[in-house]
Each structure stands twice: as C-alpha cells, then as structure tokens.
Image 1 (cartoon, rainbow, N blue to C red):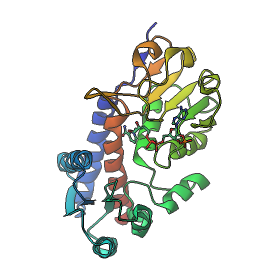
Image 2 (cartoon, rainbow, N blue to C red; image 1 turned 45 degrees about the vertical axis):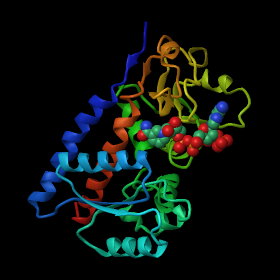
Image 3 (cartoon, protein in one colour; image 1 turned 180 degrees about the vertical axis):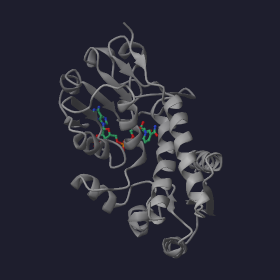
Length: 283
Ligand code: NAP
C-alpha cells in the first residue's frame, strides 16, 4: 500500500488559525504581537523568504517591522539596531534573515538578540535549553518536523528515529527534540559509513542532508514515517532529499516536497512569535 501523505500545507493552515486566534486574544488585551525582521544584502532567496514571512504575519494579525540594509552595511549599525529592538517592549520577536553578507559575523550578531526574543530559536541559550530539556524557543524547522510527525497520530515515544544530517539549524535540534519526545535517536552524517544500514532500521526517518533524491525506497523500513526536509533545485524544480516515488511505496507516512516541511517552517516562526508575546504579556 502506498504511504499516506503528510500534508504540511493543510497542517500549517490548521495551526495558523490557532495562532491567529492567540494573536487576536492578545490584541484584545491591548498587546499587538510584533516581529522585527532584519535583512542585509540582496540575496534573491532571502528576499522571497522575508516577503513570505511578512505576508504571513499580516494574514495572522501579527505586526511586522522590516529593516532592510545594503550589502555594505557596517556591522555596528546592525549591532545598534538589535540593541534597540532588544529594549523595545513593543517588539516581541527578532529575526535576522540568514545568510548575511560574508563580511558580517552571523554567530556574533545572532548571539546579541535577547534569547527571550529569538523568534528563530537559533540563539545558543535556546539551543542549550533545548539540550537540557528546559523551556526554550525551538528552532522553527525542527519544531515543524515534530508537529508533522505528531499529526500522523503514531507515537514518537519508544520508536527509533534516524536523523540524516547534523546541521545546527535542522539535524542537531530535531535530534534533541525527538530525544525529548522519548524516541531512541541515531544521528548520521557525511562520515557515517553505510547510511542505509541505519536508515533501514528507522521507524522515523528525517532526511536533512541537502542532496536531491538521495534516500531511495530500498533505504526505508517498511511502514516508516519519512520526513523530507531537503529543498534542492533540480532543473528549476524543487526536489527533496528523498526519492519520493520509490520511498512512498515502502513508507507508512511521507512528506512531499514541496508541501511538507516547507510550509511548517514559517508557521512555527509565527507560533514562536506569539508564544514570546504571550510570555511578555504574562500569559
Ligand atoms: P547543511 O548545513 O548543508 O547540512 C547537511 C548535513 O547533511 C550535514 O550534517 C552533512 O554531514 C550531512 N550529509 C551530507 N551528505 C551526507 C551523506 N551522504 N550521508 C549522510 N549525511 C550527509 O544543510 P541543512 O541546513 O541542515 O539543510 C538540509 C536540507 O534541508 C537542505 O536541502 C536545505 O535546503 C533544507 N532545509 C529546508 C528547510 C525548510 O524549511 N524546508 C529549512 C532548512 C533547511 P557533515 O556534517 O558531516 O558535513
């Protein structure tokens, strides 16, 4: 039987209704949820991401403040802006769109955002709290992945999750979130010999390697939940890290690309922003 598709767009739409109603409840209390978005340079992909984030904010009743800088912006200007936004009680979430121009030190700039306002969940304090199992603003894509897995109704606890990829923004944080959900977690990377040996034992397989159609059906355990994080360009078309055609014949559940993890990432950013505003408002 072919795998059931996990529809990230439908789940995202459902969650957005809940987020909008939380933002509306805050507004009734006189609190306007606000996300500040900082972008430097003119990376075309970042332009699209920022536009989509601002549009989504508008649709959900979240105020967005957009700060755009040229490629040549002095680092000190961004440092001053982050310091100002950190102190502004009207600003809930702060997001620095990555990548920044090479000249700028991304990690230093991200570390200047107050962890409580870190809407992307990239700050080392949030990553550390996640690691310690303490309350944290979770990184958006990993948090979206957990929502997608939970939406199947199948338990995470006690299952064997294999995460292919160990980046700081996807692989590592999603591994910790799965561990916090009581999965047994194996993390694989480019130096893992025989990846297939691991993926074939995965009840839950998260593919976040950035190589188009790399995970094929023979690498998937029958009935597994397969989450495809990959966003790769193939002749102008988007394709995942999983070969959907062969993997969907073996898996129990699978996310498509596009329409799986992608829509969830912005939704979790909005969810983080409203949660930050709720905490600021004492909820
Ligand atoms: P990344 O920083 O390039 O990390 C890729 C990871 O995959 C690395 O840990 C690397 O191992 C590992 N890897 C590479 N080749 C491998 C192989 N043959 N076997 C096992 N592991 C291998 O990428 P990322 O930022 O995590 O992103 C991964 C993919 O997800 C990309 O396609 C990206 O576009 C996509 N993405 C999508 C969203 C979304 O919202 N849908 C968000 C973020 C990322 P080493 O550490 O050993 O190098």
